[in-house]
Length: 374
Image (cartoon, rainbow, N blue to C red):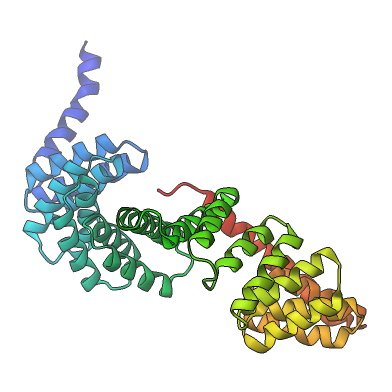
């Protein structure tokens, strides 16, 4: 028993020394323990250490903020908002708190408070993408759809690969489309415009059979309006029904001689059927003349020239298509083939390498998009 008592004596003396420390030293000790608990994944333990710290000194704004972040990480947005609010009352200049506080308000459905807080966050740091993202979502939830979309469009101008912003903007446009369609159905349930919008919405969802039904109904209600036959032809084209597509595109050109997409898709359909290359060349040249900035038309022109064995002119057309759309790997591949056929091996190898790089980049983007948002 004497031996056991001797072992306990240093521990008791250590605890007494800690309790005798000044508050700052105790706060430092608790802060270190909180950090260690967080690093080990013990969020509740870290919160408990911060709670002890705030008993020692309730005026530590940063500690309130850190507690809020821990609650936020746990998904307890009510407790997180309370902690952030306590910190902001102590230090209103702690602007880094604004984004998680505004996001917590949004998650709690406190939309007006979220809007005010996130707008302040964006003013304080215009480059904060998280603040812009949740401000846009908040505005949309408040019924300010155009304002929300504008925030996301501005964000995507500076950060075009922001997947969450792209997803949110897509969701907004889908909801707007559905709302618009509902209003149109209410005002004019059997109008050609109602069927037209229904078809476009179904086409965007790749429901081609139902889209075709709606486009045909639109045409029956309003024969001869511009775009009617193009819409039908485009569905056939997407489904690989080349003959039907060509017939519809030709009817569209009879109504609208300057529809360069119809010209190009006639040419593309003929390329796929390997029929009438002369007509295909006439149509693709017409498309290029009407819309010189249409990269698909230049690529199609290059393909037809390559089929003729005119490699040098094919190269020129492919290069023009790439100038207009640099990231299209398929055209870089066609250019590499043309270079090789023309005996320009070094340039062919460079294009082949670029095709590999573009394909790898596209694969990474697909993998990023497939990951669930945090």
